[in-house]
Amino acid sequence: MATSKTDTGFRGLYESFLNRKLTARDGIEESRRWRPMPEKLREFYRRVGQVDSINRGFNHLHRPWEIEAERGYSVFMVENQAVAVWAFRSEDSNETDPCIYQGLCLENGKVEWYREDFRCAEWLIGMAHWQIVNGACFRYHACVETRRNLRTQVEKHWKHRLTITSGPLEFYGKGGQLLCWCPKKSSGGILLAAGQSLADIRRIHQRMNIRWDFSDYDELNDNDC
Image (cartoon, rainbow, N blue to C red; front, top):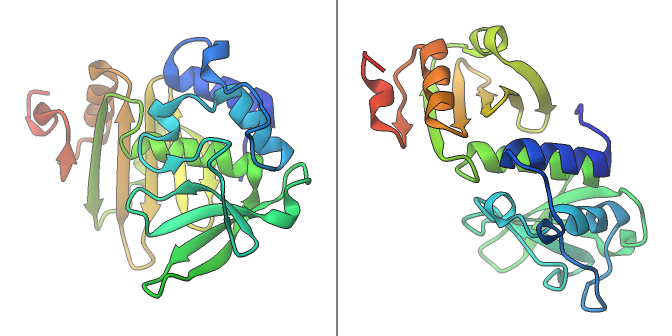
């Protein structure tokens, strides 16, 4: 999974998504209330932990003092429908950049854990991309499930940003435009798109030339858009 370098990556990525420079108010000042955590997660909270438009715009990031102990794991993010959580192993709280684990919440109240494919800093950057295409931060969003393979068409117009192999999820973008292609094993896949502005989402629509299953700008499916 290709990403930028940790702290610089957090800052540069969030500034591009917010379309402004970060300030001290975007981070959370460290205090004794903070629960033990790996250094890269600590850096993330200090730099961008208060950017709720991204961190809580879809899945929900806990505050540093809300991290929950769960049978050897420390949960710091909850999926938007609370069917999954993400955590680091509590024994790894003194590590710099440990692996992240996804927990599936079972009906019996137990959590079934699976190790993700990448470490904390990479996971945080990948999750920020996932938040954006699922309704966080950007004003306009659209999605379509199709039998067509749209990857070639996406690659033609947007630069590849990163791939999450466990999805698989492939992210592409430039400027205020971000797309995620989720291929299916059989054929086709799901395309998620997000635009910072009306011009951005229109440009995505014009270049893809598809009918969206959903968009929060109705004119996207009009021929004269």
